[in-house]
Length: 527
Image (cartoon, rainbow, N blue to C red; front, side, top):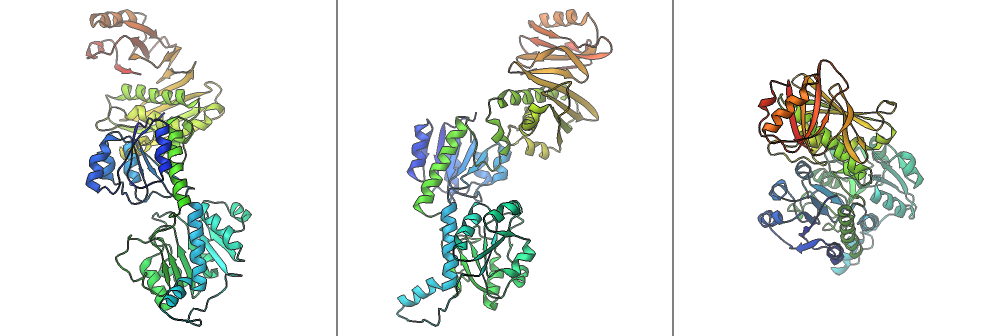
């Protein structure tokens, strides 16, 4: 369960947001219009931060926060948040994916209709005292082809509304299955097929490397001459310089723009073009959308804090499946197994490879968070590193550790178990564990199968030594000399060769060198 006690709201959000948070025991401070330096100084005192679009949550802001666990964006998209920096710090980034869907879709439709009938230009002409009926000759939407690039929530709502005008809707989306979009009247095709068919194009994609400049000189050249375009998604999806050239040449017959690369735009070439209808980023600027987004982000935070569910997390999908009663002991198991292997292999060079294998039907759904939990245990204690389920995979990648995972459905020998193998400096260490009676236990360590499962709780001392009945008495003498008591002793089933033993002890030892004459390898941890 993630604890959020103090939360900062850095922008104007609907009052319902604050009310919901405070009703659920979260202390809220609201400070608006802070400069970057002010936010960096202020954020140190908070567990959570709620923003809209004006606050730029940069890496500097995130790294200045000592206790930050959550950044909540009351709206769709997180372009103003450095998600990579947040992930590395182990901070959840959350948005409200459906809060402004209807408002953004309606504005898109308004711009499409305004482009077809020149409504804003005609209104301005009338205000100037003119009566230019011929100048503002428009065209019907009925029978025209609308290309929708991005068939998520907003794209779907746009298609429903524009179909009511008799438009034919076609589209492209790399994620939404064609049969799904077909069920709401949108025929999917490739972008190469889509461009030349459209009379109007509207984009509804996130801004990412693959969508920057999606409409550019090359793609405009493939479109019908006079095609009209709308962007209520993110500035930069349409190449602004290419759009201006297409407008001036007549290849593009008009554009409806609610978003820009720079906001507010300093270069006003597009805004001043007679065939452009522009708005100051109004997609979510309705009373209903703001109320919905403010309420949604508050409810999502409360659900997360109470351990009910996780909704809207853009960088912590692995956490979504950890809100079940069965997940907590499995997470503890993964972290404990990682800690065991980290302790046993710590005398060698850094880890190079980690393999996690879950076994049995009951473990199939937990592969993601078990892998992250194991990495938390393995990476814990590193200089300047605070691993958690959110950042464990990215930290492992940063440290050059290859992580692989698999699931074995048919392993009847150890159903409901997890095996972790680590490679370091050419050596391999392997552990198999499970949950028994709600507690994590160790079944096997590098080939040594324990007669009784080892409870992975308390202070544990691991020794790799030749199998010998005298080992326990020798170890007991060394521990007694240090004032340490033996609380449990787990021996392997093997009776020959070098094997692993585990002792539960009353406290950890300051120095393990006294055990070197007895054991080839010695490790300890507090689980």
